[in-house]
Length: 116
Image (cartoon, rainbow, N blue to C red; front, side):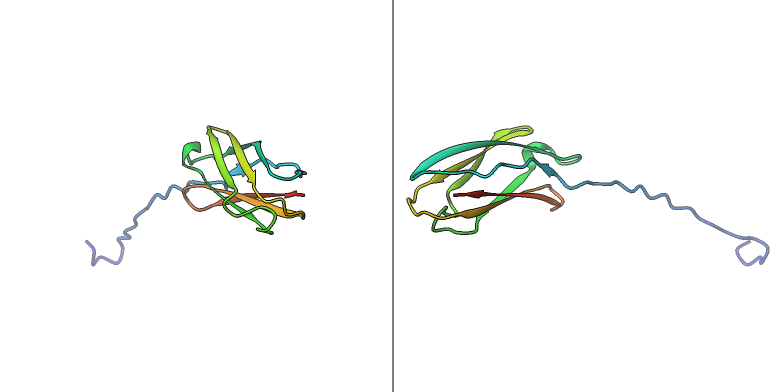
């Protein structure tokens, strides 16, 4: 039959498309510190596919003389997290803090705030 010009063979392939949205992160307000200080700032995260425990974070300071790059840590679980900032320098100035959350597919959301 395959050589019969009157026979048409066809195949159907079914493809399922799964949409994955980028994670979400709440904003933080600008902060003012006087001297050496430790602060805990609460924020929330979310993702439609990645388990919240598997989200990862990157936090950077635009002026490491004011806030060091290793002055940050994140704790908490589920949607509610805390950004811990340890300002160890008495150096005056302003630094923009950028923090990002990444899901397992590498998609991200970002937020920024300033510390003076």
